[in-house]
Length: 120
Image (cartoon, rainbow, N blue to C red; front, side, top):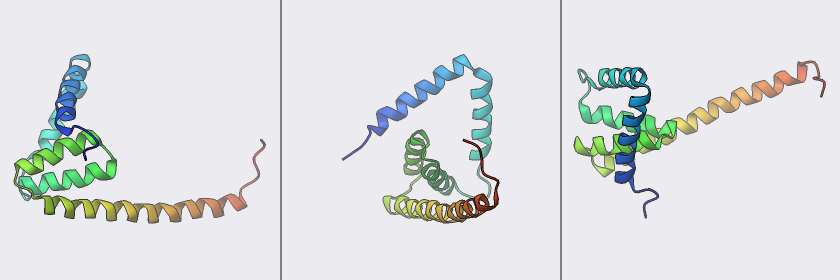
C-alpha cells in the first residue's frame, strides 16, 4: 500500500520548484547554490550523504525531501535494509528531542507558578 504516488509527486515537485523559480529566481538560485555546496562529497560518499539527508527529511517531516532523497539514495546503491536503519536513527532522534523538549515544558510549567497572574 502506498500513501502517495511518490514518482508522480517527485515530478510534480520538480515542476513546481521550476514554476517558483520563474516567480522568484534569486531565491531558487540561492537554494540551488546551497544545495550543490551540500552535495560536494569529500569525507563522506554520496550514498552516506543521501542517507543522512533522508534521516533529516524524516525529522523535518518534509515529503518533498523524502521523495527526492529516497530516490537519490536508491540511485547511489542504498538497500532497503540501510534505509530501515536510517529511519530507526531518525525515530530515535525524534523521540530524544521529544524527551528534551518535555523537560522544557516542565520547566515552563514550574516557572509559571512564580509568574504574576495575567489579566484575562
